[in-house]
Length: 340
Image 1 (spheres, one colour):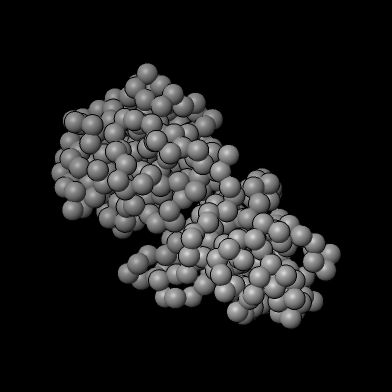
Image 2 (spheres, rainbow, N blue to C red):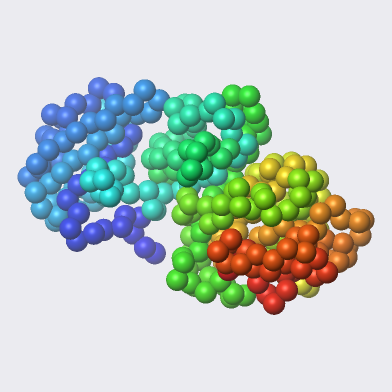
């Protein structure tokens, strides 16, 4: 089993979380200098979460010793959390959340900000990060976010407790975030080589497809999603991953073909699902998503009724699409998918 902490030979700064508000920088310095000389200590106070601190040591080994000795130690009656801190591109120090447990929160109302999300989810445990997905051009929210917990059981409780609850003017949907497959990994019909964490979905937090680009490639009435290369999945499993993006009208699974179709109540929900799930690692499979046929002719269990069609238009890789023809049925022709 791997260590829960990812050690870097050059790391000298630790993150210390779940602090009691009465803990001072002087107290932390007194405790941590027992493991080795410290350069500085900084406690961060935020209105919607417990205080946390960054402690910088003069040597890496002293920091490593402190991490092992101090993690989960009781300080002022609270069990502190100690982890390696990382340095961002801007030079600021932040907590390393790569080994934390990330959940997806969908159907966010546009007025909901990070403080509101922290306030809603902090009762379930220590939150290491909240990231609201935004459009790069307008910086407007996409309607979903990611919340990272330091503890797996806390994240599980948050998912169970908050799914379907009101946050602002909307009922939110919660689930494990899905991990994006590495860009240098083949995205053909093979299982991912690194699926150890796929159960908890350590996502990249970056949508592979552009929302506006996907939205404009089908009619305003289309709300059907094609879900391919998904293995032998059940309808319940498909619903568990797709219902977080909005109300589902119908799910059709074709196990012998290895794909499924999901029809949403709205096009917006379908578009969000395509953007977020396409290219993700779900149960060890790098899955593909695209638009299905607009308005299936009936609900029979026949793939041709849900065939992928894009109004006889062709899309190249520059537009993040491969060709879809009006007369194709089932998965896209030549085993090509959005963005590949």
